[in-house]
Image (tube, rainbow, N blue to C red; front, side):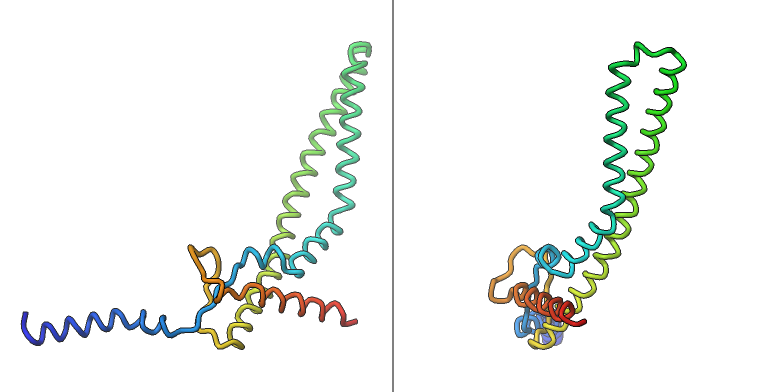
Length: 176
């Protein structure tokens, strides 16, 4: 290998190692996003909001389910004693209620999923912005989100970001 080839090889090797050298000098942070999503008060508030929003419809659905169970119980007990027309009528009523319950349950599930996604998107954006804000204030060059194979606890900023999210949430709640 000639002098120029060795120089070119050394230059290429040095160039390839440059990102590692830069990364070694970078200030790093790690954040457990799942923990933030599980514990941020913004996310819990969204869950509570959805629970209140869907409580009435859930109660109504449960009442219809109870009514269906009672109709089935009575039909099983007394169905053989009923005249054919009355028996057929009760069976149609049960079938119609079952179809209605299934449709209502499916609609409720779909709407709840959609609203949950909306609430999570709002919270996710706020959490992400808080992580970025904190990283900039602390002079971090890179924040790695979970999941990772390993992160030294010294660079874990999750608790500090969570504390900021809690403080921001409380400040918003305190404002009239």
